[in-house]
Image (tube, rainbow, N blue to C red; front, side):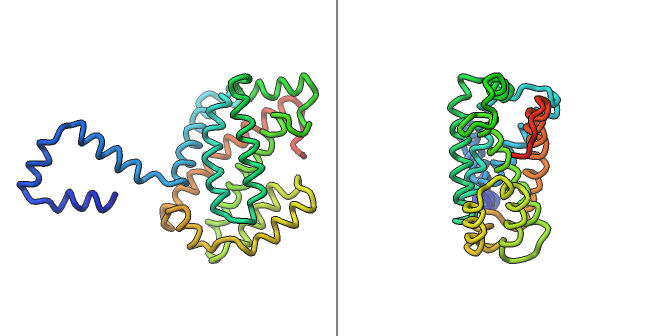
Length: 239
């Protein structure tokens, strides 16, 4: 995008006149393309969760959040897992699978509340493969990324091992088997460096910090909203 704007500013007067004579449709298309060029995976995630967060804040925690809208935002997060390499491969596969199952069920259930209500009525909230259990795991994935970003921003270390290990230990490890935890921790040594991660995300230090902070702030209300779906039905969160 920067190159495009520089070429516009460096035109001669005759070229400027020719440019002005272009149709407004062409101008609109040019600006749309420029805006699309700016959208990185991280900024797309931040945008989506800011929209969800604004909706929940405006409507309150009693709002019945649309399941498809939620899944559309969550599906963008899978790209972030992919950038972390083999250490989070299991988390990525689990997360993608759970989001896919929820998205597929969105036409039948409509909202997140309906998912919980169905499983409560059928006593299947914690049953393997139930949508309520899937939602719980997706929530943990969102929290893992949030915690990782927080640790990433609070450390100047060039590798992500400590930041990722701490985030995983706090958000997901308590709910994974010993075998999964062992595999994840072993894979931490293959995590990209800070610079490699920024390159994969197509971000600079400044833009990454800005977008990570946006996601951290926007994801918290969504995580709290999901937690309340369970606690309001007297379902504990220790699983």
